[in-house]
Image 1 (cartoon, helix red, strand yellow):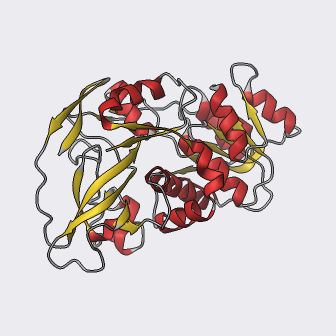
Image 2: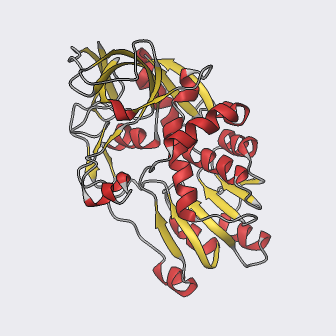
Length: 343
């Protein structure tokens, strides 16, 4: 099988690997497509994500969809040829946090695409049967790969406890930011602002449901948002960028007793914070850790609202061009939104 390894910053190589047989309770899957996530891009560009450095070589990719090829001993309900969305997180199911329903912070979590656990930029993978979800009939591979980032967006709205008619700003219009905008619109938010420096992504934000898209290079987003809310500020701010001043800007534009939701992952291991503004406003600062029991709902939404999500996938590229795909995203070229690697 072909495997794309990141062996140093900005460089992939294709190698041949030998797939193992699926063990008891496992299913072997042919990986058909994998979306490129912003965290993958951190590893590619910076050699780390936050305080976690790369361990080379490593296999990235955690937004996969594929086709069952064979099942291991004890597996029922799945057959060769079945199409599936593939969950990248493997839980222990018996720690304190799993037993209380907080699987996304499992004490023994394994997340495929971390240095010690290869991800899905490879043609074949064995997974626990619990990590497969049936792909709805008629759903394309590209659409199927959106289930993982959409689940993250759904989880962020639950954490943010959004209420009907509330005003909200989303900083960053990469795929997670765009999906957050779409979910806010479907959930009945009031006015939605998007803050994004890339013109093509501002256009996508408007297509996905934003009422206004602010170019931070043309006008300070804090000044614009305070002016447009009569100095009150928005009810909630979602930081899906985690770059530069975005977190502090979220704090400054959120009303007293409002909520700031951190979905993006900062590149730096330590982050400066406008603590005293946050303190005086008594803001709730909320952090998102991937998703938790949101994947089934994400797949249902993708199936029922295909027209809403269709603009997000802008490119589908073969595994041989994986390095070019990452470079295109890094440079914000060719109007790239979500890029899917086909295997």
